[in-house]
Length: 382
Image 1: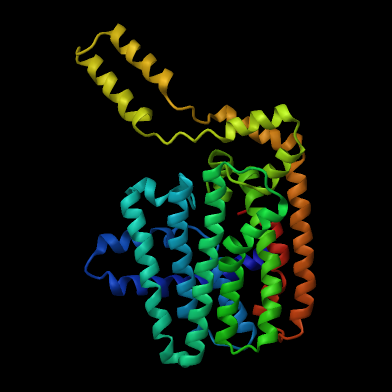
Image 2: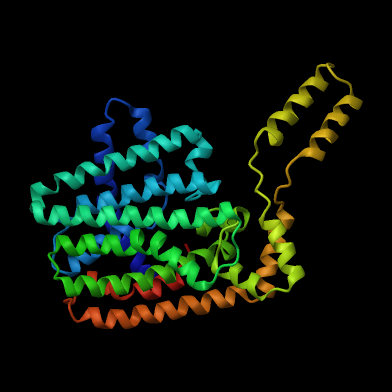
């Protein structure tokens, strides 16, 4: 199924990316540099999950590619805008196997590009009236508005936990956050858009929501597991980036609940330390002191004294050894096994939901793709 899913995603990705590039090109035609930055994430290796789902649902329900393609491209534009903003908020270093946009172009440009993608995504939603009519256009706009709102709320939950240093969280807390942050915008909204384009009745859309929500929960847990277990050449995101960033993942929360008081205290002390960002202390001060010494402005003794002074007052940051300790901490308390068991439970719920939904769909390559999604999300390697 993984190979078939990859082939299906690849078949969808070409038309979607061309449509998305055309949307961007149309409104940045006088600024090729901005166009180049806007399509950066689009051109990197990716699954194309969200537009693929949008297209598959529409086609499985009897809709056409021509009608759904603009909306599928919009879903991908929103996704890339969210990624840019998430990477800034999380302090991520990599995205899709290359430096995150704020790392390569600076935070101000990255923020503006993310905002620009969100703005550009609105126009195709309005011009949907030309080929979908007013009723379906308004329904899609409502889905997108709900998607953006839920995504914001899910991100706000996670950022609030980080700001408040909250670690006393249950599996239910984690799943509530994932339902908002991942399930809606990665699974439910793309599927609902495809269903609206295909004029699916409300009961079918409700069944789709149940299926996609269970898929989304299993998908996010697997994504968290991949962050610990897969090397960069397969994964595309920063290996063990969740531990560097102090993400509230199912396996880490489970380990914290199962740990002794002393183990929990040690883990929380590491987690409270920020990751090194290569800022002023990391590079500029070192470079300046070296330059002053090289040009004999200061002698070796003064250089060592300055470095000692700065080191003593530097804010503690996570080290490679710290991240290794956290990884071992998760293993010692069966965090990975716990996360896999929860993912398996949601995957089983997705299979049950699919049995209810599948009777509404005729046999096709699109239905076959949707039927195999449960196996895909729990067995994928990137």
